[in-house]
Length: 179
Length: 63
Image (cartoon, rainbow over all chains, first blue to last red; front, side, top):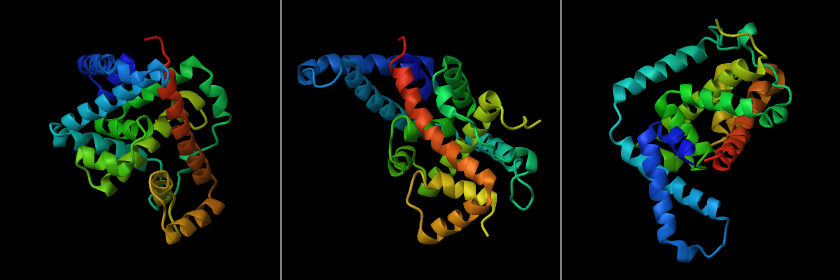
């Protein structure tokens, strides 16, 4: 749980705090729990809410200039996959991943996936995780982070394209490396 | 016709919002002809599944 929280908040101390808060909140409400779900699932649900609160708080204090720099470098990497007329370059055209199910059985695959998440620019990774790990709707994410809807879609596209490319190069090895 | 780059954006959007009728038709036409984009689509669909698996793996992890 601590690792999960740290990854999403990208801050060790904040990750530990939020897990502690979630456990305290779980203990405080233990009489309401009454074995309806597995205890772990229940604490995890509380943890998700705490993480969203922490992200919402932080959304107000991030520096815009550093965000823009990160975004630009990701866009340049993505643009390099295409020709000037916006079709795939022959050497970067996506090729099927084979059997991704087999990868999911392997511990090292998850380590590669985690590393790919960590190299995403902070806000890009955060929006992706809010969408795919916490299962929030796009509208909810936009309003939490004070972004426009279309900006949210741009960020999610960037995150997916970046993760896809990172996993292709780091695990599936179906396309030559970019450089 | 839709370019590959614009098609990737629509494929990503389709995971977050319903596409409009025109967008859907354009994308379907593009995918029919474009093998690279078909691979892209299945891979970003996989990312969603992988993410759910990852959250579980982390949640059931050792800590």
